Length: 350
Image (cartoon, rainbow, N blue to C red; front, top):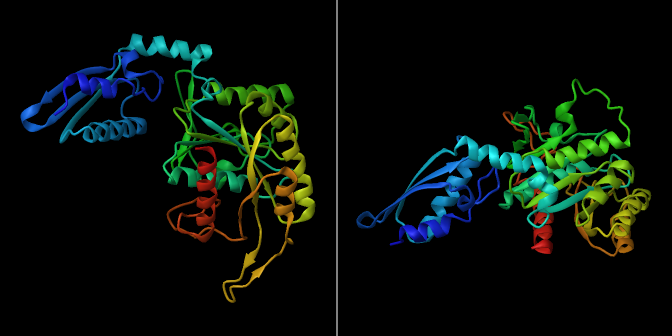
């Protein structure tokens, strides 16, 4: 049977999901009771925000941790941290300590880039992110395609982010946290901004959004090599990149520019994803290469990387009570392709 001291030793390194400080720093373990005769431990934990999805995840983590240490049953209660403690650490966050840019050692940034629009870059972003989440990773999407945002619609997101204090809480869908310019635009209005304003918005997405602890943040870049892509390359010196193209040689030729930009800014290219690779007939099972062949292989050779996967021309299954026009189900053949791509990414990085 564990002792009170062992329980504290196990729980102290855990972090409050919103303040990102350890339980020991916050003095968050208010009570520990060990009943040896019943092999039972009860714990009272103080956190900054109760009754949230993050609390449910934390609850499961604590229970699993204690049971893994040999405890038969666990009683767990949550209560609010003192207001002065919350304000103290929120003030420190406001000074930049909680910017995702300051936690690059904990989060892997993966930019999804393309040379031109219409090749399926956002499709790749939302499906690789969803596949990573299905594989148990903590994932976010920053839709950095300021002018051509499409991630919320592709994922079927209808709600908007909420603001708590001075922090923006991203919307979560399919286990992925999402922030997009699309949440802050009314009636699909066009955005007429210049470079400096775009850079300020991107900085806000990093510094003012309550991302929590992420394993991966995927960035859906605008096509090409314009202001937004340049800003992100300078903000994220350790970013990885995936280049999306179609099989057509011209598309691959244009995509090479985005790849060369990544190389010049010392971003590691994880690989190439070939979208619209072929159409497979449901009647005959034959593959028709509508947009030609060889573009991704030529691009991968030029960038000295590999082809992570080839995405066919297919639609996700239709589901009556689930609207997400761009997300493939886990058992869909294309969903399996994206799962394999996500597994390759994890293998490469971890």
